[in-house]
Image (cartoon, rainbow, N blue to C red; front, side, top):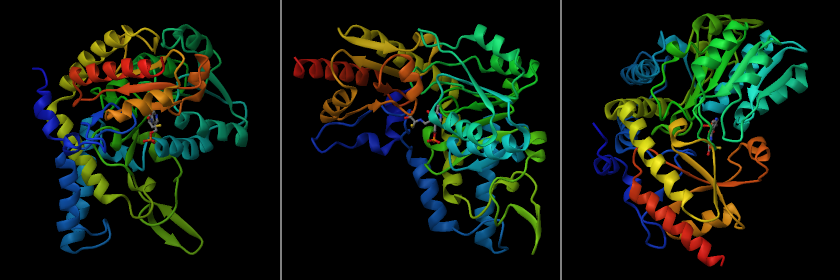
Length: 408
Ligand code: C6P
C-alpha cells in the first residue's frame, strides 16, 4: 500500500506554518535534520510533565518511571535495527559521537602505527576527522575506496586494498551528497574475509531503509535520532557485544561504573559502561516515539515513497538547462538530489529559493573531499522524506527557473 502523504503531513505541525513572506514551508532539507511528528514532541512533553527524574539512581516512583521509559526506548530501538540484544545499543549524542566512541575506545586499544584503516572518498567529515586525529596521534595509515564518476564506490579497488590486511573498514551506508546506497553487506563480507572489523555510518540509511544489523553482520553501526523524526541530542552506537565488552570505557563518571575506590574503578556492564553522566532522558523517550512512528508507517512504504519522489525529482531537475546532478540514478540512491546550476553560486540558489519558502541546503555538506573529487566547492541539495510530495518538487523546479531568470 502506498503512503497517504496528505495524512502523513498532518502529523508534522511545522509543515503547516508559513515563512516571513507568507510562503508555505517547502521543507527539502531532511538530510540535514528531519521534521518531527506531533507524537514525538508530545512524548517528550509528557515525559517532562509527568515523569521527569534522573534514571538508574532513585527508588521513587518518578525515577522508576523515567528509567523504564529510557530503557523501554532502547529496547524498541534495538528491535528497529534488529540488534540481538538491547545491551548492544549504546546511547550517544549523535552519529559523530558514535564514530568517535569507536575511534577513542576500540581503535586506541587495538590500532598501532602502520595499521591500515579503509574509508571511502564519499565520507562525511564525521567519518574522516576522527581517523585523521588517530593518524596524527598513532601513525595509523588511511586508504580510501574511490568514488566513480557516476557516484558509486569502486569495489575492484576496494578488493585490492583488502590485500593489505586492514584492521578496520569504516564507510557510509548512504551518502549525504550523492545519495548513493552502498552495498553494505558485500563491503562487510569482504572486510571480514580479509580479517578487518567494520563500522557503518548509518546517519542517512537508518531513517530511510529497513536496516538489519545482524543480516548485515556489521560490527559497529552509528546513527542519529534527529534525522529519523526524533529529537536532536541523541544517537546510537550499535556494536556486537563481544567487541563492546572487550573495549575500555570512553568517558568516565557516574553511571558507567560498578564500583569506585579512591584509586581505581570497576566499569559497569553493557550498555551502561559507555553512558557516563546523566544522559539525554527526554530525548531517549522522543527517540523511542520516533521509532514507533516510523514502524507504524512502515519502513518499506517510506522507502518506496521516497524512491518515487526522488525519481520524479531527478527527471524534472534534469530538464532544466544548466543543472548538473551529482550521484547515481534513482534506483541506486536515496532521497537526495545535489546539483549545481551553471554560473550561479549554490548559496545564491538556496537564498533565492528561500524567498518562496523552499528550504534546501547549500555548501559542501560536511563532505569537502567528495566535492573536491568532483572539482567543485559546493552544491545545492534538495532532500526528500516521507512527508514530501511531487508537487513540492514542481515548486522547487519552478523556483530554479526563477533563479535562472534573475541571473539572466
Ligand atoms: N549530515 C547533512 O546535512 P550528526 O551531525 O552527528 O547527527 O551526523 C553526522 C553525519 C554523519 N554521517 C553522515 C553520512 C551524515 O550525513 C551526517 C550529517 C548532515 O548532510 C549535517 S552535516
